[in-house]
Length: 414
Image (cartoon, rainbow, N blue to C red; front, top):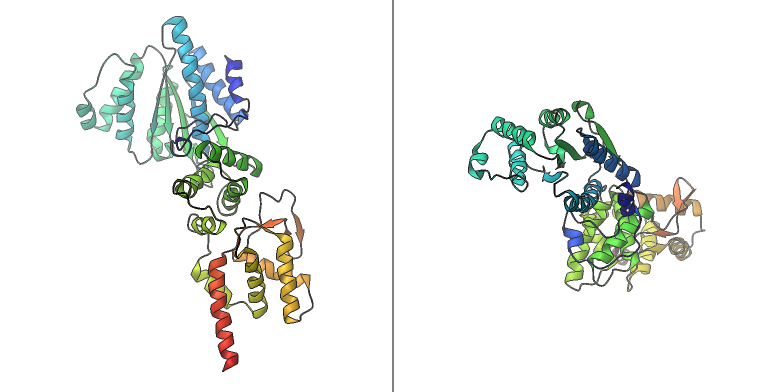
């Protein structure tokens, strides 16, 4: 049994087109995943040991939203269903039952209603849905306990996004499971950027953390999901740009990358629009909460720059104009500064270049690439000398510079 589950943790390099389901179905299990083997083995061991030895187990998976908790459980459940079928063929009996409830935006009565509704599929009786719907929380809790006590086989209950359940109710469920061998509890919690306060759950048996991914894993997952979702796969640099924006403005979790593929790339592919770096940059600047770059910020920033810095920006724009470039090489950034110095007759001072570049980076005008920069060395005042930088807001800066340079021309003409 263990070896059969272990075989599902072997990385499968065969990625095939699946369709939009791979982006829009929250319970989709990809044919290729990067399994978190340590967590996967722990989940499998805890649940299967409890089933085999006849005791209850309660497990909580916690971490950032999009870190793969639900995917890991769905992957485990996919194997469980096949294992269940084999057991039924051999013994003609159900070794266990499975049910899940998404707890988001639901009160405790609604959660119990969903559990009882799902229970009808493996019970020999039907409930009066109207009476259950009208029942108060106390009656629902008593009915839930009664059903669990009458089950012929254990129930594995998966409560997804359990952070929406009030602490006292969730711990009461954990406590009930502890006393009843017919109930195995799996919960997931999106903990945000802080550790969840598990001291509120005295009856929870095991906590399993899901942390962020490294850049190479995030890039591989994003490319694979793109190949599954789109019949004509998107070029690698376009999916890499997704990873770079997520890394810069959010948390390094696959869910964020999949959401960008779904919300930004999918409409472009469906409408046969060109996936340009400028369009992607514009969309993502409104996608993340902590992106400070917009036309007002740009205007304020450029008005505070001196003529040398404005000319430097204009030369940077020249690299992007009339071509769709997803990354600007660091050599081109230095070359733009060199041409700026030559035009205004200044000696090239690279210390000044790095100070100006740091100013641009702080204002999100230009950002260092993370994915293509496996080795980053510090240079002058904390600036990273990296092989590539992300696209700059070319159109907006171009319009502002034309306006500013136009004002300068009028001033000198007068």
